[in-house]
Amino acid sequence: MKTFEEKWTAWLDGQLSGRELTEFEASLPDKAAAEAEKAEAKKLGVLLKREIGAQTLMNEEFFSHQLRERIARETAGSSRESGGRRIEVSTWWTIRRLLWTGTASLAVFLVFAIFVMRDKNPAEQSQYLTQILNARVDPVVSPNATISMFEAKEGRVTVLWTEGLQSLPSDYAAK
Amino acid sequence: MGRSLALVAAFTALIMSASPKLQGAETVWSGLVIAENVAQPQPIPLELTRIEGSLKKLFGYNQFQVIGQSRKLLTTGQEDWLATSKFFGLHVDARGESEAGYVLNLKLYKEKELLLETDAKLSKRSPLVIKGPQVGSGQLLLILVVQ
Image (tube, rainbow over all chains, first blue to last red; front, side, top):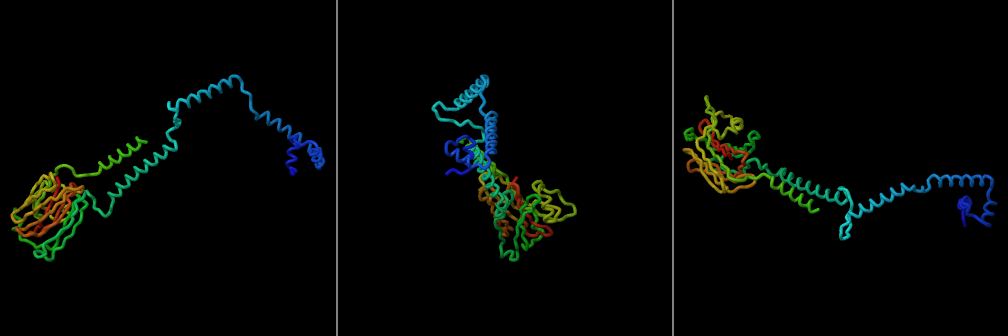
């Protein structure tokens, strides 16, 4: 069962006939107004067809079009391998190359990160400074001796500082 | 793709080779030094000029006199040597070379008596200074410098 809108559209397009046409026109409340609207629609259709319809190509345009198509075909043909495998005609930043570039960048970043983190490991002293691994004094000779160690930033000097070692007379300063 | 991988590999190798390492033979100067305050101080020995400021600031003395010294060329990193004065002896035993420097065992003797022993990694860029016993009005210092 067609709705009124469907019948209306079909009537405007001249698709109704016979009993269906008679019944539809009889159901119209104002047939004159409907006829005027149908005429307007037809005029609009003609106008649209004329303005946006396919234009017939002139001879020069047709020749130019054919030439462009042939050049495009030949360019595409030259990008095929002799064995028939197709090579993509592409610019540098294809999706595949973007992926590879991203992966390579990530790899370089990770290499840098590993090296920097290894160098910055706070648990280790800088390898440019002398490190004192351990120190001991004879507890019998110097029972109250204490040992500490530090680095003087000026001159990058590493110092092993002892206190309480047995003092000696000045004779011991002899060469 | 192959070129990209080769480039990444070459770059990685370049970075790894750029990491600092001690290479080749180095000379280690080891000295027994008496630091004291005197009215007319002698000029500081040549071996200590680069740390003169640090020594004066740390210990507060104006004269640093070498009473015993030794200069040793390390080729294998396994050498040992002795720096001596009349009463003191500093025995240095190199126990290998690492990225950080030379691993050394140091022993300070007063005549035949062991006063102090320490193990250290001596870096080329960082001298080691050990504060020894008080001697008269001065201070005995043990100093090691890679030259």
